[in-house]
Image (cartoon, rainbow, N blue to C red; front, side, top):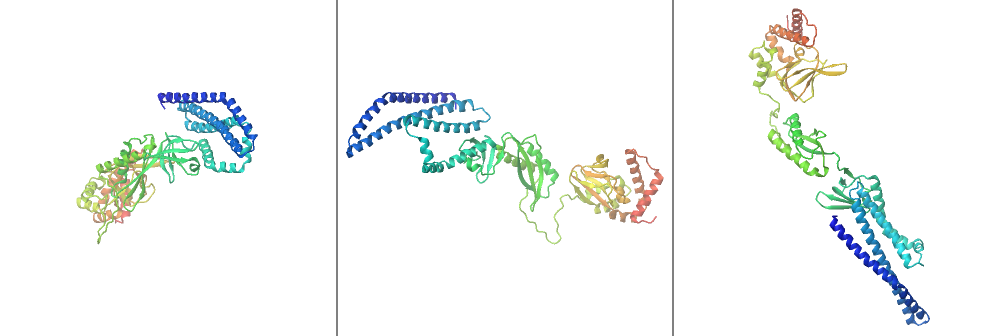
Length: 497
């Protein structure tokens, strides 16, 4: 309420109060005369026993009581005006910036009720001093039952309001969700109930007694409250790429807090595609509808730019021996070019590399996924085709990265040529596509050209010496080491010496 309206309301209340006070003073002055006149009429009527005089006494009694009721009405009206003026000046002005404003409103209502009750008793006693109100209200069973039934809901709301204010599960400005009632922003809390402004701009009023029985979900104002947005994509899209695109799209949305990083995760592998969940934190939860909508809009445009597709119900029928296309398949020419540039396969001719490329397997690993484990036995080696991997060694219970491999690098060659155990953990740093060359793919080539064993052993020993030098270990003698590798390769592949 602005100052102009406050002054106008105060002025009107003062004028009416002055008029009532003047009327009460006037009635006070003429009251002795009216009482004396009525008493005289009563005396005259009582001296006669006729039926007409009895009616006259009854009429005089009504007039006398009407006069006292009129004075009670004036006094009570004056009390109401004064109380309302105090409420406006004290609670709506002095306490409007208080943190416990909603609590002050409840206290105001309780104080007003007490003032009205006490004022009624005092005013009634001044007009009817010989009437015992206490005896009337305490001895009348019927009146007690009627009052109890009439005030049942009111008292329930009042005491439930006390409990809500004592516990303070929510405050004005908080977003609350009430089962079977709706969701909205708390606008007011009183002794009777709570006012909630729904997101359809409707006012929902719920009594305290009903509210005290409900399970209420509260999103406090000023708190970072989380939201979850769900959608899905087709299986042919890369999860790692999808996560990166989603995070960038969500980061640009207004009202998404930058204090906590949004969580993007796979909720489920559904029948029609990958189900995704985005968990983000809002700065103003009351704006979650428009924030959710902006996140979905940004994701749509980002997916359109990156050629990522949303999933929809589909059914695919494969006829005969048809199989679904491999999302991560590579053309034979790309695989050949990759293996042709790997130094360890330099002794092979073009036809032999083509044979090796045709039998190679493509493996795709997620970020931070283990490719090979230290100590495990293997009969294959790997060539990094797309992505980055880390070579990790665990010492004293701690893992440390001792090397990083990129496109075209290879690892695990000792497993392919000699069947030795893996000497380190190899972990994908990003989404990584590797070519796996297995023991049975190389064996026909070595059987057809046994002289390749000598060439491979020389390259392997040279690589081993480089690795030993990097790790500051003593390198072995070139000749004896090479002979040892040759024998190991021949033994592993079952070749004759």
